Figure 1: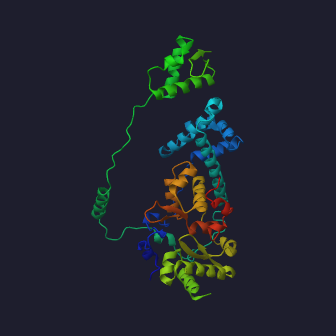
Figure 2 (figure 1 turned 30 degrees about the vertical axis):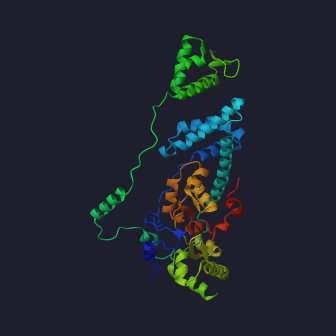
Figure 3 (figure 1 turned 135 degrees about the horizontal axis):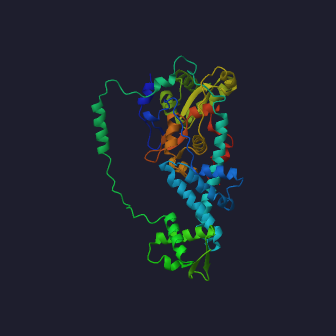
Length: 261
Length: 168
């Protein structure tokens, strides 16, 4: 009988080239009851929630108000390693938006990236809202299959089980063969030494400013790596924001003087 | 109903679960166009009935009709498994924009969705389709539609608007 579930499971996809096929892989079969669905939220979800709390929309102007709450969220929550990168991307984009607001000459920079970000965020919000509707309707008035009220659990009988008489050695062999056929990939990228962090550089400037009340920024960063120079710049901006220092620069690219307050 | 529609109805009834369209074509020796026409006829025919058919991109299933869903719900003691926010938004993307590749889901959600898609697989709510030699695409299953009490994706709220890919 062609339609028995067992046969369907073993049926390999047949079809002409280019036609859409049903991929029949046992661990993807909808037969596992009670699988827990992850509660974890992504960075966009966090942003949308923060925007709701602060009663702002997701435009570029409003997003800068969410920079700090977002950074606080990252610090206070244990974000799973696989999602850290996406949170950092969002955090850096928010910082960029804020930096553009603080330094008008940056206005032209990264315009495309920011527009893309805000558009994507708004797109995300629409599908998220549609998903909320699914949550309300879920299981309220389901359409049921033939055997729904039948004795015993149909799903449980369909779950994958190893064929009878399968030896562990055979499985080990199959695994060995499979792994042997995977080509070893030589990494193309290489790691560089990590520079000083923002906090480290911040405290470095703070220590220097305890001994002298005035600093020439360009002199202070002379000879260090570009990355550390960038971090140093962020550090003095942060100090200026906290009103620890005052910055003075008479002309574009001129000497930047840091005054202790 | 014509003979093909009758045969398909009988096959769906005896199968008792979702049947791949390719398999229905093979068993009834019909082309894709003939199958679509037969399914349309079957769907029309079931409008007066307590049963209906759910149609996805790849599968067809005979189920109880939305007309009797409220009546049957009183006998259904199956505890309702709630879905997380991550699951709901991922399902929303797959339902409206599917079939789509994982990259697109990741791009709109702003986060890697491998794990959540896998979990939705295990719950039987999404399925993997493969256009030959390209990255796998994902689409929602008849099980997903049946939980929402609808028979095709087109019954989802604002479907035409949210399914448009150039949406901004």
